[in-house]
Amino acid sequence: MKRLNLFSILLTLMLLLLVPNLAAATYSSEAAKIPYQVNNSDRIVIGTVSKIDIYPSYTIYTITVKEWLYNSIPTETIKIRSKIGTNLAVEDEVEFVQNESALLMLNDENLDEQLFRVPLGIKYPVSDRDAVIEELKTQGKWQEENKTGNAVCGISSISKI
Image (cartoon, rainbow, N blue to C red; front, side, top):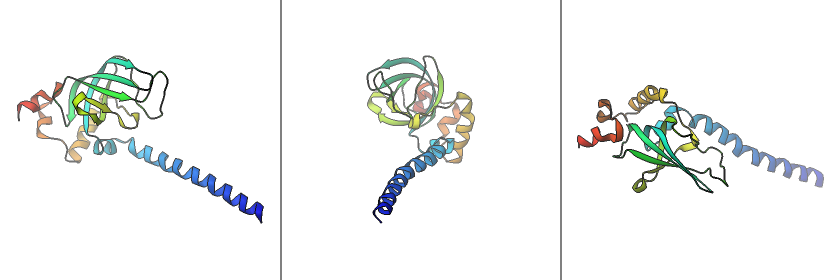
């Protein structure tokens, strides 16, 4: 009887450890899709990596903004923090190389410093621009100002205010 109880306890513990991993795997699959990312992003931008600063526990990527697709701010550069550094690497964190261009769904971290995070480390190719715009339209987030091009730093949208 004691062996059965010990076996039951071990089996229960194994199942409890497995269930959160299965749930995370399901969530990650859905979260990687454009509709989910558009719905859960504070801002969407197309830009190019112009500077990389690596620290022991994180990296700051400076991105030169080419175009704001959603919720622009008046700046020509933004910074993205990644929890990958010389002494630390966290799974599901974004990594870039110098001069890489990407379409990014951003979450605000510190607007005063133009500092953002990329959820789940997902970056999209610039070629996904039209698909993201269609999803913005579907979700009712495509603003009139965006239809005029909304090029570098959202200057065109700022001048309409």
